[in-house]
Image (cartoon, rainbow, N blue to C red):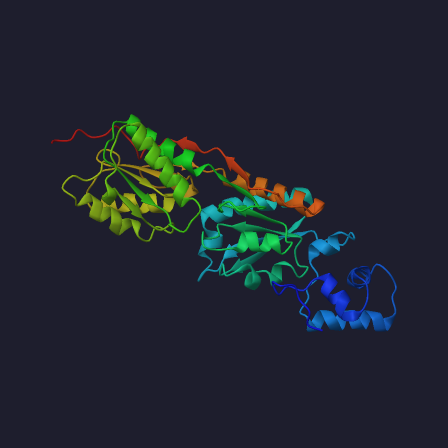
Amino acid sequence: MNQRRDNGVPTIKDIAQACGVSSATVSYVINGKRVLKADTRERVFRAMREMNYHPSAVARGLSGKKVHTLGVLFPVIESVGFVTNPYATGLLHGVFWQAQREGFNVTLFTSKWENAEVSAPPLRDGRTDGVLVIAPPLNSDILSGLSSLGVPVVGISAAKHAGVAVVDVDDEAGLRLATRHLIDLGHRRIAYLTGNDDAASYAPRRAGFNAAMKAAHLGIDPQWVQTSHFDGSLAFEQTRLLLRQSQPPTAIIAGNDSIALGVIEAARDAGVRVPEELSVVGFDDIPAATLVTPQLTTVHQPLVKIGEKATALLVERMRHCFSATDEEVHLLPPQLVVRGSTAQAPRLSH
C-alpha cells in the first residue's frame, strides 16, 4: 500500500490506486462533498494514514474549503530577536494590514531552512492556503521546494527562483545611492561593512557599491570591504580596527542600521567625531536611526509596502491556485534619507 511518487510525496492518485477507487472518490472523501459508503471512507482514511498523506489546503480550496490563513515562515532563532527586530516588524505590519484587507488570518512558522521535504509538512497539511518566506539563506531550497510541492509561495528578500514570485527593495540601487552621496560630499576613502554573505541582498548591494565607486573612478581597498553581520555584533570591533589604520576611511557604509549604530559607537569610543571626521550611512531606516546622536543618514527600505505587496501577490495565487511560470521579481525603489551622520569629507594631510 505504500505507493509513492519518485520524490516520496504521496498524491491523491497514489491513494486511489492503493484503495482501488478513483481519484475523484478520494477527493470526495477528503472534502466531504458526497455521501459515500462507510467502508470506502475507512479504506481511504487508512491509506492516507499509512502513506502519511496530508491533504493540502490548496486541493481543498478547489472545493471551496479554504482555511483563509496564510503562513509566514521565519528562520529558527535562539530568542525572539528576529521577530521583534525593526526589519521584521516593518514587514509584518504590511503583511497583517494586507491580510486583514483581503480577509485572511496570519500564522507564523519557523524553519531551520532545511530542505523543503523537512520544512513542508506543517505548511501543506491544511493549516494555511499559502506561505510567505522571509529572508531564506542562499543555500536553502525552501522556495523552489515548496513551489514544487504545490504550495503557493512568495519570497521576501529572497534569491530568484523559477516559478516563485519575490518581493524586495532594489538593493543595488540603494547602495548606489549611499555611495554616490558620500562621493558627492568629497569622500574618496570609503569602507563598506556588508551584511551576512548568505543573504540574498549581499550580491546586489555589493554590486551597487562597486558600480558607484567605478563610475567615480575610485579604487576599492579590499581591507575596507568586510563581511559583517546584520545583528551588528561584529561592527564595533571591525570599525575599531579600521580607524586604527595609518590612513583610515573617512566614511563607512553599513549593511543595515544595526551595523551603522555599532560603527558610530566604535567611533565615539575611539574619539573620532561623527560626522566631522567620519561619515556613516546605514540601510533600512529603522526607528532607532532617529534616536542616535547624530541622527543616522540611511537608505529607507519601504518595509510595510514590501509586506503588503508580497501578501497581495500570495493571496492572488491562493485564490486562483496558480504559480509564476518564470522568475517574477518585484523590486521597490529605495530612498536616501539624509540626516546628521554625513558631512563633507575632512581635509586630509598626505
